[in-house]
Amino acid sequence: MDTARGAAQAERSANQVACLRFLAETDEARTVGVISEGTGLSRPTVHAVLDDLLETGLVEAASPASAGPGRPARAFRFARETGLVAGVDLGPRGARAIICDLSGHRLGYAEVPPNTRADLSLIPQALEAAATSLDLGRLRAVGVGLPGVVEADGQLRASLAMPELVGLPVAELLAKEFGQPIVVDNDIKLAALAEQRGGAGRGYSDVVYLQIGHRLSVSIVLNGVIRQGRHRLAGELGAQRGMRWTRNAQRGQLVWSVRPTSAEVLSAAAAGNADAQAELEDFCAQIAGRIATVLLVVDPEVVVVRGGALQDSGALLRPLAAAVEQELVFPERPPFVASALGREAVVLGAVGNAFDRCSSAIYGVHGYPSPWAHITHEVERTTK
Figure 1 (cartoon, rainbow, N blue to C red):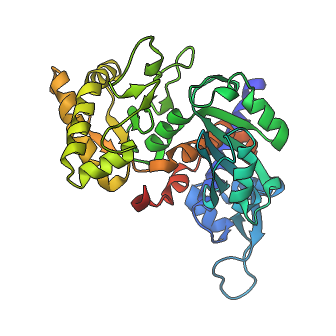
Figure 2 (figure 1 turned 60 degrees about the horizontal axis):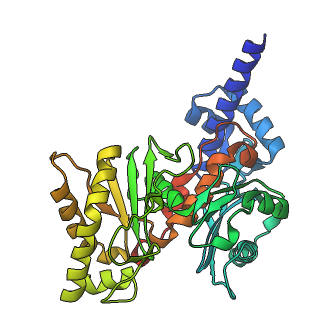
């Protein structure tokens, strides 16, 4: 009896997902007949599903997009504005926040610098700034990205960038403040997830993400899932005692001679500055051995690299790919491609992770897929 009941519930959930996905693909109201044809479900089944979805508030009755003579048929639309899902990227230099509707469409975005130093108080500040006229009482889940080792329960275990937050049960504290589910993960891992789901790694299951910014960071997505490891240390290559990626690394921070930051060095190299090009080539030669080690252990399909503005990426990708090639014996190697999501990768990963991990709480429907295509669609790719 329990098996039969479980099968019936699974079928019911699958039918709800099918109807909701069909309605979510358009802003127009659709009749039962159109939904039935689009999903392959019978009209009685569609009627039953819509009754359930009307009760949850995910669907509302509306006038059909087009109606002929006579009494118009009932029509329904996905009420994507009834709930909100947010993501926050919190770091030592401030916070970014994004707010999406239930279809993953961006409704608000904000960047908030710290007053004196970054702390958890920046998260509600950033959300308020992104909300503008939105009602944050409609929040159904919030994803957060933090620099450092984040436990499965949302506690920050270690962080060079934000040591003042180490040991805090971040997810628990924020859940009490917002009264909604909170999911917290490492910022670089979330960036890798976003690139794999809707950025430069889209279409690949196994992705290595390399970020060259104030520090050098690596994260790995295998079979479409962030590789965490038993102690959530996967990708934390800087945690090896005595290891330095490069000569210009000081306590993990990259210090350049030609320009103050990695992005500025990259921009200068792309503009033809010989000193910047030489420093960048030397840097790539220094990190190539360790990148090659990662590639031989993971054997990914693609390496997504973020190092500065998209238009300058060639100045990094060419010497990096060439240096890594010198370290490898076998001819098979993954392509090196530029990040498509740029500085928004972490915050997009945070909101997408909230959709992934809190789907049932967000929709009240089991198995509804996260709207990654919409989440990543609106990134301004020319301003990375």
